[in-house]
Length: 101
Image (cartoon, rainbow, N blue to C red; front, top):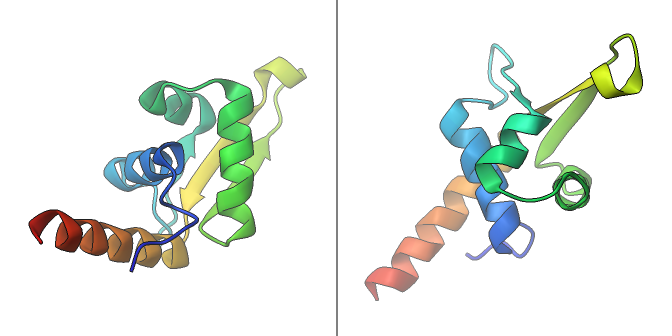
């Protein structure tokens, strides 16, 4: 079934980037830096932040801020949650079913 939260292209790309990087909640939690996601998806900071907010509200990602010496030195880390990984995988299955007829 198509997931309406993941379906918009930038959110799909965000989930795909996190999944490909292994930034998925598991027994050991792995994260991906905000800047690396931004570069992989090729969108602005503001747009990425907005899209992450939607994914976070749905429980598909978590993010936390590691504080540096100043705000511009902060690092935001993002993880695809177990729920997000399941939703992403199911969404891919639905897309393949549509593509294959």
